[in-house]
Amino acid sequence: MRCAQYLGMHAITPGEAPATGTASRAVVSVIDDHPDLCIGVLARLPQVSAMFTPGVSAATVAEFLAIEESAAARSDIVLLDLSLKDGSAPRENVDQLKTRGYAVVIYTGEERQERLQGTLGLGADALIRKEEAEYLEDALLAVISRDEAWVSPLMANVALASSGPHLSPAELQVLRLYAVGVAAKQIATITGCKVETVKTYLKHVKDRYAAHGDKVYTRTDLLRVALRDQHVRPDWWLDKE
Image (cartoon, rainbow, N blue to C red; front, side):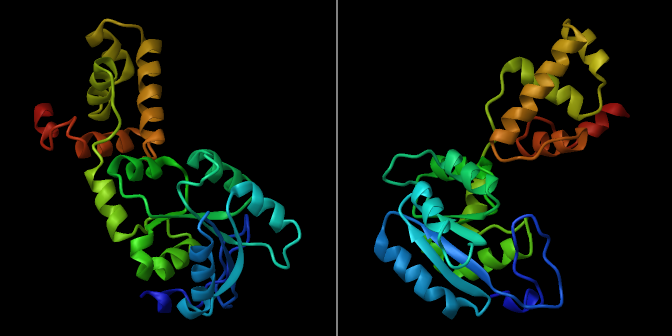
């Protein structure tokens, strides 16, 4: 475990960056429609680390928010199951919690590869499978320290197995050209379309990657994902010589 790296971190409060020098506790709650699991996780938290205080448990996000209104201490981090019996959409659940200032760790027993890949674009602060319970401390400490690069071993495999979003032939052509440095005006000439059309394709590409869990803002970001997804050859720069 990596507990020693974080013992000086201040427990997060919504909207507050962690501060060094004090070791405060973070209140951790669970949203899962399996009561026994909720009880077990909350009971285990103090054993995992003295930095974590058990919060409340709920079967749905709506129930959790209602309980929080009268809770003795507001939760800092919420462990959220991916699939709840009320049929609520995972993205909406994450959005509701994030909008209200909670850090969200998806804690799921989901095994289907495509469903797990879909969690990469939900906006959660961390992702962990229930069968990786030994990494729960790492996940929570990563959230406290705002370590956005942390990912559990199983989820790392899921991310590596992801082949990127589906792009149309036109979007793919624009991505390949723009990622290696071709200007939008030149792309318009090459493809025989308007500059505004090229910009629209680029926006679609960025939106598709964002929905897939990839933060793509700059040309460098586009080159990174294009190389990773093998849309651009690793030796593309040789073509310029």
